[in-house]
Length: 86
Image (cartoon, rainbow, N blue to C red):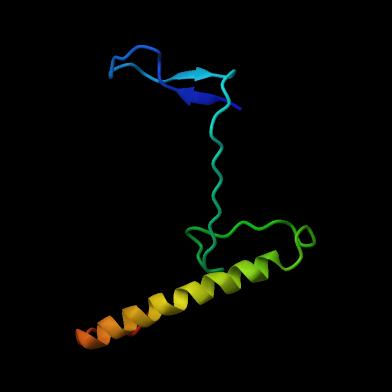
């Protein structure tokens, strides 16, 4: 693991240095989306590694999308927009 920190000098123009002796912050992220999105497909663990994980993530995604879709539809109707294709 490498830690990217600022140089000891106070000059703002200095570039960062890499120091493997200092423990750094480790950040992880996880994203899930529609299964039919070819531009940004989901990447899943092989079947059997975490049984039910994929299904739980997709259910969570669609539960979160429901209010968003309702808001888009409501806004479209209230502004007399055509919502075909949503």
